[in-house]
Amino acid sequence: MMKVRSGALVLLCLVVFSVQLERLCGQHVDDAVCVVDDADAANADVIQVLSNLVKTKYFRTFKVDYLRECPFWESDFQCGIDGGGACHVSECDDAEIPLIFQECKDVPASPWGRVIPEAGVHGWADGDNGVWCDCEGSDAVYIDLLKNPDSFTGYSGQDATRVWMALYNENCFGDTTSIEEQCLENRVFYRLISSFHGITTMSICKDGERLDMFKWRLAMFPDRLKNIYFTYLVLINAATKAQETISAMDMSVGTAEDVKVKEFIDEFYAIDGLAELAGAFNFDDIKSISGLEQEYMHKWQNISRVVDCTGCEKCKIHAKLTLLGIGTGLKILFSDDSTDLSLKHNEVIALFNTIYKYSESVALIHDWLDFLVSQEEETESTQLETDPVIEELGAADGYGPAPDSLVIPVMLGGMMLTGVLIAGLKHAGRRGRGRGEKKSQ
Ligand SMILES: Cc1cc2nc3c(=O)[nH]c(=O)nc-3n(C[C@H](O)[C@H](O)[C@H](O)COP(=O)(O)OP(=O)(O)OC[C@H]3O[C@@H](n4cnc5c(N)ncnc54)[C@H](O)[C@@H]3O)c2cc1C
Image 1 (cartoon, protein in one colour):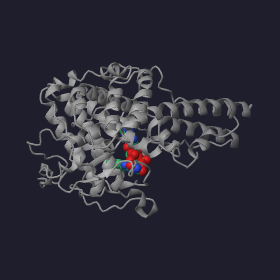
Image 2 (spheres, helix red, strand yellow):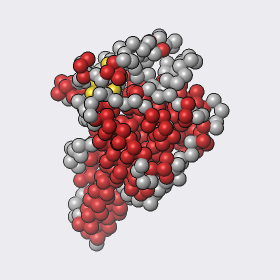
Image 3 (cartoon, rainbow, N blue to C red):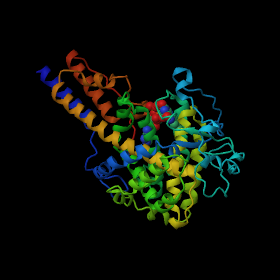
Image 4 (cartoon, rainbow, N blue to C red):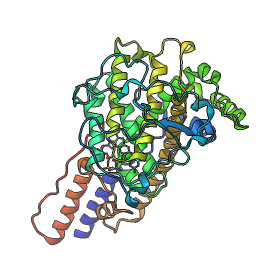
């Protein structure tokens, strides 16, 4: 009798765990008119074309100032594994920089050199129009993205969490209700930041060795995954709107590759289903809000300054690349007339590399979710004898839920397991407790 009761409770426990992971098939991307499956289908071509494009000399040369100090708090954190080796950035020497970029070397420094008026994250003066990311400054250097790929660097702990929290807290429009209850412009801005965080996590897990991290930081939160899809759609929309400007740009570095670059760009714009993805989020709803462009731009600039507080140089270059990529997308989408649009080399390079990062993430989300859900289904049908709580929490590299993201099912699972033990020992028991993280945020 007791065995039956224990079995039933363990089964219940398994069910509680299982409901947390779900495939996204058939689901809509929040705030967009797009089913995840359609994005997945077109993404197969996007990833293929862009994987070629981002390997070209033009698109892998990125200009960034990655040594700027944190303007908001003392930050002397040194990252990571291999005595910091994983965070090391390899800069291009002059011979490696294509002439097309060297000619622009004497452009006056951007306004970022200025002292920030107060030690808060806010306080931007007017007049920084058109510059969405504080990336370039006078100390900027060129780096080859192929020699500095995004990867697991070991940067973590309070220092990293502080930067993420500053991005969420300081730029939240002062509205403390749940994201789903907020107005469209707040939701969109939040989705952009959450997706930036999401693809950073994806880049850490990308080699497939940290599937547990993917599971506990992203897969358990479908809204975070869908925010990645959302920003992917926003970026495709921007690239499509700027097609004329981008296609007319001189991207030649003086090698035979120049023809290929043009071909890849044309191939990108000819992808089946791209126009549908581009139209999935109607940016006019955002654009028509009076004063929003300035507000978004200032917040995005603030975010790029907060990223200077990241204690890992390699992480910083990819964070800045992504911020410039999304910032360029927003700049394009807010522009009145795409034919008057003027884009810098670095902006286009960041835009396409960022679309590629999102494209890679979208592909991996699909595959990894599929794998994890199948694994869970298999476990459900074959592992009734094992202790699911201990197995889940002790999986692979030991990665588990963050203290602040212990979800309610974990708590319930713990309580049920406690019930099983209590029944076995015939004692009155204590109940397990955990803190829940709201899934919608
Ligand atoms: C700008 C920046 C760039 C980084 N780049 C790299 C890198 O290239 N390589 C590397 O190895 N490490 C990088 N890191 C560190 C990495 O992002 C994590 O901070 C680190 O791995 C520790 O992870 P964590 O589990 O503590 O959670 P964190 O990722 O630090 O997240 C903190 C909390 O934020 C919430 N959260 C997590 N994801 C989301 C989301 N998508 N949407 C909403 N909320 C979320 C969760 O509640 C979580 O507990 C970077 C950090 C920063 C700040």
